Length: 217
Image (tube, rainbow, N blue to C red):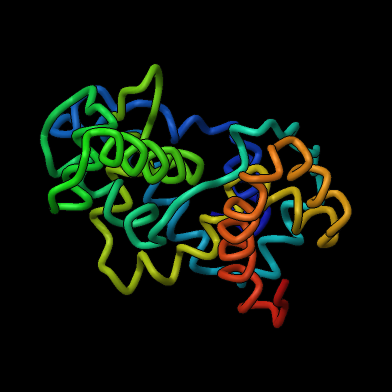
């Protein structure tokens, strides 16, 4: 792959034009063409620094519209970005409900409401990264997630700060030169009681990317 082809692939990926975050109907049938595409994306991502990826995104960037649903919420970073995608596939089930995901993640006695909220928040965060697919309250594997869990833990951790830039709000922040006023305008979509919790989560994601470019929010 030439450098021009590589940059084009990266640009299309971050513009959400490759559809690698769509549902993979059967995790056993990996749809080899899509999985190979995802693995190619991962290989190309490895060859760029975080700053180089941000620069590629900026070249043809169009700001994503943000709604309250796009503002990330989670309790445990690892559960959201590693464990939820893994369990979606390892369970070998389709149309996983939020209550089931919450139970698989927490593995401790809780009320159903707690399982539902925990499962929903962490699955939806994983889906924002493209690592699973959530629709109408059901969780299914995505092509990107099926491919991601084949990587070693070291490779997953190496790629994660770059994959976080797939999240529209995080991508907007870095592509718009870390515009904190614009970021604050997103939070104004939420109730005051919700803003503090979501702000902390978004800050965590921003700083996970930022530490690779000497930036901290």
